[in-house]
Image (tube, rainbow, N blue to C red; front, side, top):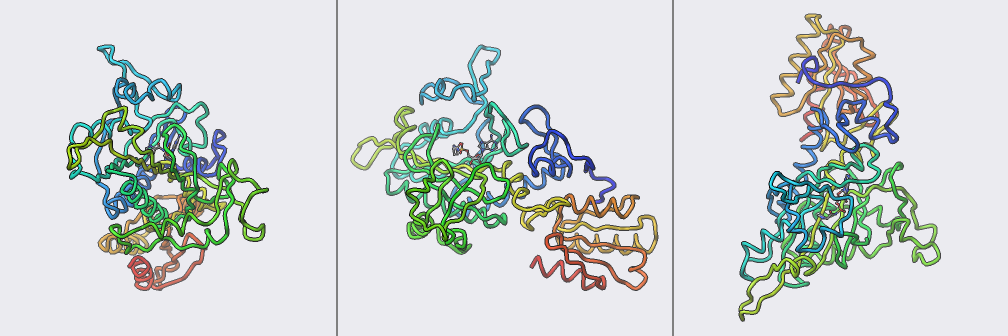
Length: 440
Ligand code: P5A
């Protein structure tokens, strides 16, 4: 992609309305623009990151046996009256009336909608378990939307729902999502810690939130340092196997947010306790028959008995993650994307666009990398070197490959790794093979 044609409206000035670094950097790097309070448009660079995160989520959900669907954003108020949440949800719910005076709402979550689908189409115990999810926009009329996409009113969530015959089977579904979440965050390049949580408006009696550590996180978290040192479950994990041992391993070590942490009763000695700041990037719930009973979602057992299904729901804050990654990975110059979610792999800088020798080398590098499947953002603009380097650092692509008039004479280019900042003078071929090797 040539930067001269790309829509990348970077800003030099720090926008005054942005209080936290991810919000500032997302605006400055031209990733998002605010449409109204807590509602954002995603521009090309930001949208690419969102899609990268979504792809990882889709792959990990598939590995764990969940199936993708797509439910609407608008739901019928009557469905929420059946569950009893229409009134209980309060002013956070955006309520809408259509031309026929039918009351509707912009979904803040989809427990009711998915339960209706399963209620209408699943009749027999033989059809369970099922695990269905979608990635869809949500709306919650937060009283104080802030921190950009981290606490929006409209935000993108992966929300999944499991349906099982009994607690044991539902716990297996819960465990598989727990493990899938650990893997998802690890693949994105984040260290996520599970914490025992309250279930809030979703309800139920078993719940964990997943918190990533970042100095600028909203809440204080306390954890056994051994938990922080744990490696995520391997990517060859068998989701058919009993995952309870992994679950136990991850939940037996102490972790708590500040609301739950009681220094007087903390089981971890002070020298083993880490205090950090965190951002909630996921939350999972087991709520038994809380939705299936009021909505009448039951299956017929072999003896003809009707049984209400046991449910769980599993959320990942997809749009929040874009901000959370930046909170966890940036420096004074800008964003430092983890390779897995970077909007492009390589920023190719031509220091002297219009110069034949530079253009030939830059175009050739662009073509070779692109052919090899490397995503290149090629800065072919007629701008000063300082502007080009500053923009590249700001948008944070993992590699910067610079072609300049002095180097090309002797067939040399400069390769910089954005994380760490090491620079190397290399021949064109070795620069290419370094980038390709690192990806392999
Ligand atoms: C689980 C899936 C639920 O809604 N129902 C379906 C359950 N859980 S949750 O904790 O309320 O939300 C799941 C994740 O969504 C992100 N999130 C937000 N992201 C941006 N702005 C918001 N206002 C917002 N609210 C929730 C969080 O990452 C949360 O863990």
